[in-house]
Image (spheres, one colour):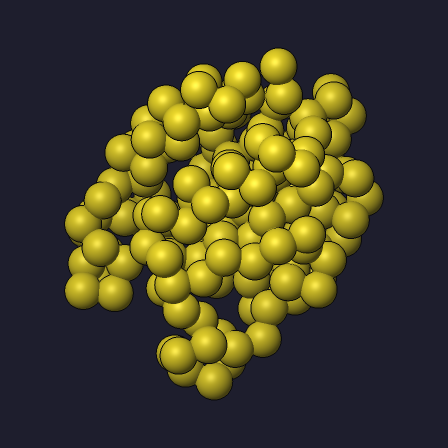
Length: 144
């Protein structure tokens, strides 16, 4: 059974409450439940983690890389545009990574157009709302 990490960064714990016109009304807990349900049908196991703290996210990436996970579904939130340390952790982990964003970051403010993660990700999914997580899982279950 493939182990895949589902990592969500700052403010994603506010999904369903935070700017629903932009991010939708589905909560992070609902997204995790949907991904886990789909994963079991793909013979994958999902471990989910969310933090508003960069160091905790980095520690989790290191842990998952060290214990044999094959893939990472990563929504880095605002750290997408600022965190070299998060990028370096993904590279060092060796995990096949799919970057996910609920909104289309390329149709938003200029500062959101640049991702420090995209260049080292195996794939990037943007603008598909919570469905993007399912696309990432499908890719990792078949490729990871």
